[in-house]
Amino acid sequence: MPAKARLKKEGKTTLVCGLIAALDDFRWTAVKITSEPHNNLPPIYEENSAGPETDTARYLAAGAARAFLLTVPREPDLADVLDEFWPRIGRGANLIFESNRVASHVRADACLLIQGDPREGAGKPSYYRAAQFADALVVRGDADLMVADGMKMEGQPRGPIFNLKQLDRISVEMNIWLKQRPGLTP
Image (cartoon, rainbow, N blue to C red; front, side):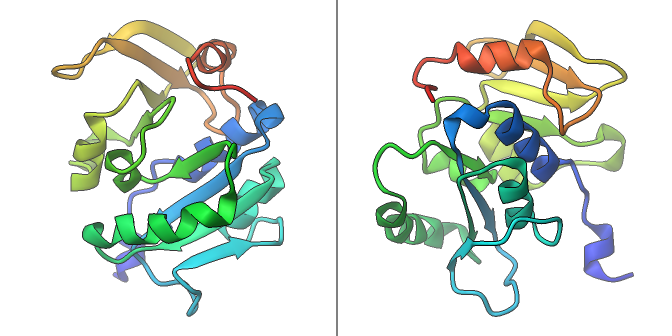
């Protein structure tokens, strides 16, 4: 079986697109960080075409103002690529990252951790590192439901768990929670 066929799909891109669409007044700059090379693209690539073809094109189709793909093969190199990236976006940009690795490099106003299907085994090591920065957990559920203090991570205040029936449409409760986060402003 090819390696790609074994990759778990938690729905991160779908959730990011749902957040971009629901919070369109933020005029997001959406950033996907990957370790996999994509068609000889440079380490910092700005997408310019909206559509379903790539994750960054999906960000633009969902309403992002800008979309980037950062290709960073190894963890230690992420800081260098981010240092190169910051001048390209300018001050005041609202950033939304699809990445576990970025959590230890960027102080987020809201850090959401998406739970894959627990029956499929353990997550990536980067998932567990990112968990220490998570403000809320997102899981797929049969209905939209918020468990206010359901997430408990050692050494952190309790956070909500958002059960979402569809990851491409965030719940009213999640929308309200995000808009009430200190530092998150359109």
